[in-house]
Length: 164
Image 1 (cartoon, rainbow, N blue to C red):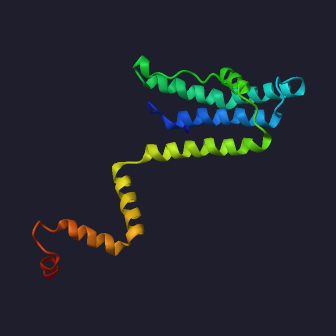
Image 2 (cartoon, one colour):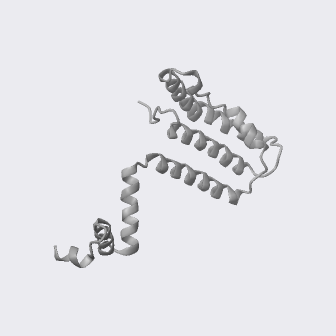
């Protein structure tokens, strides 16, 4: 059974693609800022890409194949993740220093987590969060009083309402 879900804009497939991109960038950061990659650096680059191609990319592309079997419309189909094209694009980006690599990785991972959280929000969750925040800002008693104020009918005073 697969860990990735099969939905049209599957955050899991998107997250997996982004995770592979982060791994490519991390590999490149480990190799240093010198370009073009030559000798030992080129061999390590190719070995890292081969490892990604054989494991993560192969698994992702199987998930995409499964997704494409479920989705009947051609315009909804997904393309395989092209590791070599992504690696070339990332290799052509300006070099990143070793100490900057982790912060860039953290930013990408934080963005993925935020997207997953946003995808999971429903109206009920939104309302719960809103009331929780309101409660934290004003205090629960003040929120209850505000709700009672909203329940009063036009022309009815609060004193009359309190007597009932």
